[in-house]
Amino acid sequence: MAGQDRWVWSLCPSGEFNVASIKNIAATFGRTAPVYPFFWNNFVPKKVGIVSWRAVMERLPTRNALAARNIDIGDPSCPFCGEYAETCDHIFVSCHFAQVIWLVIAQWCNIQPVIAFSLKDLLDAHVVMAGSKKRKKVFSAIFQVVIWSIWKMRNAVVFGNEYPNISKVVEESKSMSFLWIKHRTNSLDWTWNEWKSFRFVM
Ligand SMILES: [Zn+2]
Image (cartoon, rainbow, N blue to C red):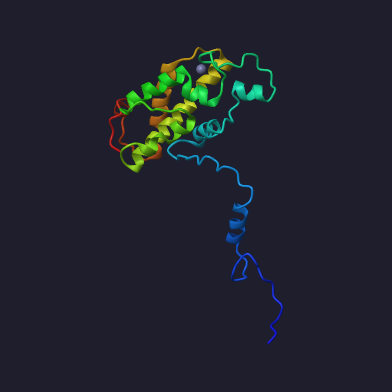
């Protein structure tokens, strides 16, 4: 018995069209390495996350990035140490200036010094930390604030003729993370003194 002609979607056994079948096929073609799954932490404002997100992809306008685009920027070296090319992984991770900051931040937070070889290591450091999901997320937020503050300091040095100042970055990281995290987690009972000595209930 001959039926009526009908459209058949050959990618599905049922012959019915669905989007998942297209996705499955598309996924098998020319896929490059997956993009780093950046954690957008809502304990801090978007503008803070954006710096980390751009940094981890080497998409901040560092001197090295500008030189790679043939933009004449004069001295291509790190504005903090002057010894190495200014890349994101350098200014946020391996530069001596950044290393001291991470050491002081770890002391403040009563955690082991963070061993990081790349920005990814820093941004993922909270994952293996002890404690609740909220505690890990607070650490991730603090780290993103530190990265944001280092970039601010970098711009102040490059464009404002400031001297690199470790304690300024540390103090700004402490005060801004307090302000943002306290309100965004609705932990209104946290006091500044508790935060400064990292003794608060979470
Ligand atoms: Zn440096």
